[in-house]
Length: 178
Length: 280
Length: 116
Image (cartoon, rainbow over all chains, first blue to last red; front, side, top):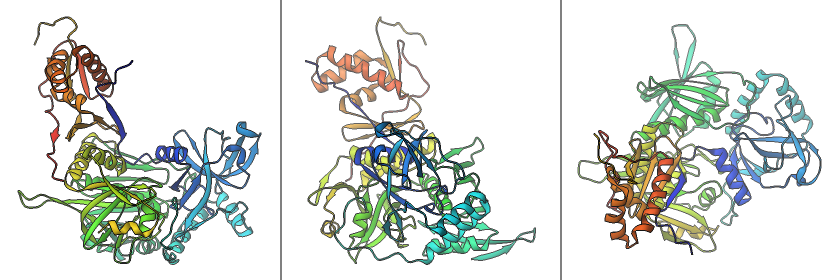
């Protein structure tokens, strides 16, 4: 019978700086995670600084139009699904940022972390739209062609954000993850 | 906002953002960006003249909108810091307190720069920023620490009316040195760094009475943790971005010092307001 | 300085580039600019604190570990060798066949008597 070791060295992380690693670990072990969008690749649908609630999903369950979170090269990105190729766990999905002119390389099941289930906006959770309305599609087309327009939009959004007061906190009963 | 004219004849506009008693003057030639910051940091706007740190903000057009990246914070041989992420680039000379930020008109970018700069300043003073909610009750501050999903926002939402929320996401901890021989203490400050609650904390401060490590469960309870467990939990939740051995060691010692002075316990709670009966 | 080296002797020393702190029975170490903290349990912490570069590892084990923790020398030495190899891999300990003489080996970790 193997004797228990006398010495033990426990390794723990220092610093909460590795957001990508923490988020990926969290969603893989807990099934969901909330993270903050830092970049502008999804305007006008997701704005920098917005918090996203992401839930684990199998690649076979993903549909075009949904926004998914994936990890590649240690970096996280949340982009919209534009195409699903193949079936089952071997399927690949093609994503594209709403503000970007070109799609991303295919994502495999291993790289897929989850689906964006909700976006925190104005103090409450909202489901992301799978189909953009006319206004949003026009904005998207403009932003894809003009970085100046993107800058103006970011500016306007930031001004609007502070002009809208968040709703009061909800009742005493609450559920985890929100 | 205050305006000054530079020798080039261009107007420069200033706004002072004071968090944790540390003022940062933000200077830019775009008055609408300053208005935006004044609204975003309402409650934390102070006199720019009193600020010990100054940043000139150079607003740029978005360049090839990058995917999200982790931030890199490095110190050059001459001692200046460089801060780099997909949405901004900044340089900062901590000796004179001055720097420059290159970013789009995205307040979330400057938010990140502020968090990084405050974490660097606090590191030299025995303080730190911590992933935790915090609130003041009966004149004392209570911290609730945990990573994403631990319940920071939930416990913040459940706070009773007599509790003042300092933050639901990132707590500001400063060490106050007392006279020789007297134990120093730790103060928590309100911050404008919000989580899912999307609500700025109150710009107040209070001495820290306890740090709770959050856990979810069927009943409310407080359990002791060893100093080593407390340190590990704290070190895993501290916001510190710099790859710098000297400062990292200081933050490490600060965390160990903190858990030796402030009671740390595990707080398991049900998602209802009854947990606050344990926090007084 | 040259020293007579007994065959099979191992010498161990705490690395210079690290911060360490004793908290209760355990020692926590952070090396350089790594984003990892190492916690040593009581036995590992005892070895760590005795690692002055001049005392052979088997003497540390016999004098401190076997006495304080009531274990057989062979078992303790095996574990100690594995421990120091692991810590050397993390860059927090030096291991050598000859005494490690340095102008300054950092002292034993700071200790908090605990005012909680």
